[in-house]
View 1 (spheres, rainbow, N blue to C red):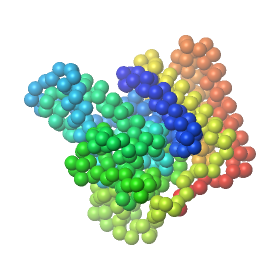
View 2 (view 1 turned 30 degrees about the horizontal axis):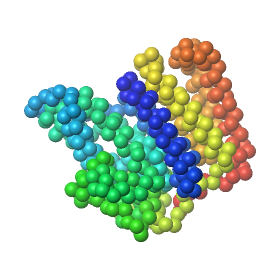
View 3 (view 1 turned 180 degrees about the vertical axis):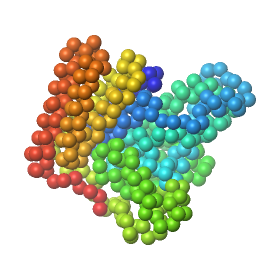
Length: 423
């Protein structure tokens, strides 16, 4: 946990800097592809995912370490060769786990968050799941285990492989010539994120594009079919925690309402989007039928709300950085208390972004958590050792956040239309 937290301390400012550069470039070229409120939601999703990972809130039924200890034909050292093998096998593993997440109903729940943005920009790369609480695909790493690639090499290569998928989430880079035949490029990944019928469930590769060509899921970006982004059952919320469980909620409801026991069981393993017979008429859900004729969610917001949301996510990044930099000092079980505070913080301000009046109650709950933490520990997880007035800063911020939320609910929202929902 601590090592991964240190890696994220380095990675976060790099990602944030690139997101800002993309935004500035878009404004300069009069082709801004990164609305601020969408970016705030995406970054918030990235925060929830990284906190979940650092806290170790996931279960692996079959660990790679156990796998390599049982089936390795030899044992490699941690050298250039073992890292190369690890990277190649992880990319194979990534293709199939990614493809299955698109094709099986219950697996889609953990991946829908990544596709939920109706924009395509660097920040949407950070829309990663908290709903992936169980790792089911370690068996796909069997080739590396057979060759005896050390578990330590896999542990280092996995985050590197993930971070290398960041750069191609952009509309500003067009087709890249010869590179298109080898690596996943922005053009390839625009196809993957598109909801156009021509593009659905294509280009699942993560680094090397030849997996799609080998397994029949490749689709080139067509000049006459501009990609439209999002999910066909739109999220209609900026709240990343809600988005993580929307599809699961629908599956549970449909399984409960299904009259046939067979449907109650098989719905989980059917192709993504499958519902029992006549359920679309009996229990309709909002679905985009014409990708070129729908309204994006939440496009009508005051600049005050947008700028306040940006301030909130930047402050949250400071909270997260302190957590990641002091995991060992904060220790167990306190890191889970801290993580809970981060989740409540993001839930609260993203509810405000959705113009939900209950955001005030979430802010009050958050202030209560702050008071309890400071009262019980006498300090904000050791912050006073860094900043002597740390407690006062945290408490003052919490009070100001409530005041701002009340202002938006009582005054700002009255002068603004409610979020526009897809039709």
